[in-house]
Image (cartoon, rainbow, N blue to C red; front, side):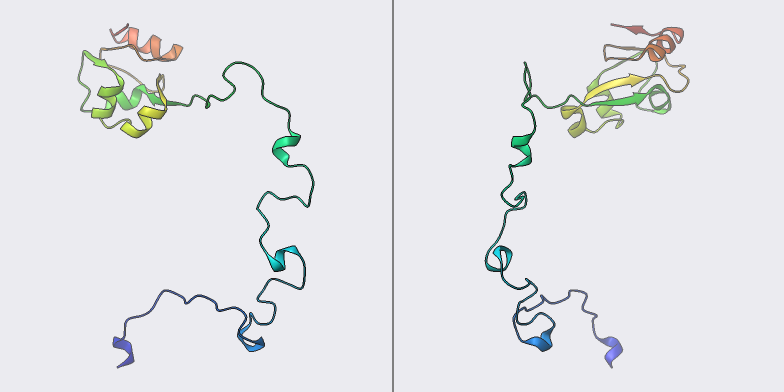
Length: 146
């Protein structure tokens, strides 16, 4: 009959301060005396020393608060293999999203670049940033950069 019972996976919360026999009794796992026993200490507290962020030099100059520009690369071989991208088509970020080579979420936060790995037989045109190898392969296949 016991084999028909549903197995419980969730483990109950450990009850602290319920006597020595519980395994977390008397000091409740906090140790004896001190600041951490009586209250909480913030995560970046270094025992009264200067905070790390204040010890480091300031960033100076224009655009110091801008986030670092990230870019995502799409290789030519992936464009070649994609059935959604036809011969003599314009490659834009929207067309790459439609072809499911880039997700819309990533395209919003990243710069999309075309990289030169693989062979290209499709004649494509693009205005996206491309590497030197990619430019060479696009031109050899009869494509153009705008």
